[in-house]
Image (cartoon, rainbow, N blue to C red; front, side, top):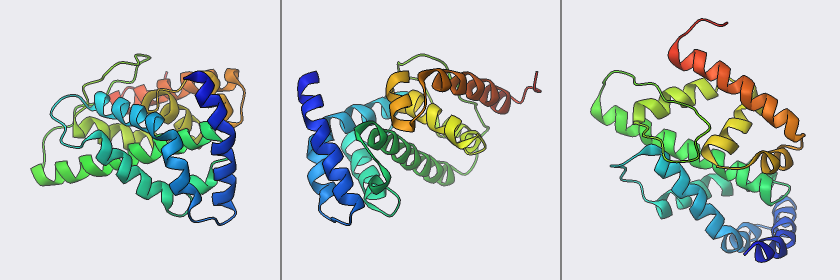
Length: 193
């Protein structure tokens, strides 16, 4: 499996460069190469949302694909890791939009804040939780936000995040710690230390 992944990495990069060069069909040829990775990523997102979610894995992938196919989507990716980071962000955006629609349909309710930990397992996150987290993420430094998106939402390891963002693993660790502390203060309304 790992050998197949590495073998297709060159093809993924070639197709990403073709998409950047204006090849409209490159993204369509790219998706089958990374579809299983996208499924794992989508399942991770949906698992974090907890039970009772009506959005299915395939639907999340398709909605994210529409975002990736648009301007500033997949064409901005330079390699597989960078593409997966962009895909993680697109999936987060789809889920946030979905949560906003659900919340608007319900009209109200108190806010329950999300928990951001190191756990890679499912997190029970309501629509309110996801919206609160999304609003807080939008206030972070862009690179710190990307680290959170890649690690928390995308399930990526520090090495993969470093490669995707073009920084060192140490920088990723430092951004992770800073972003988690800032988010904790923002989500729980505790004063800065």
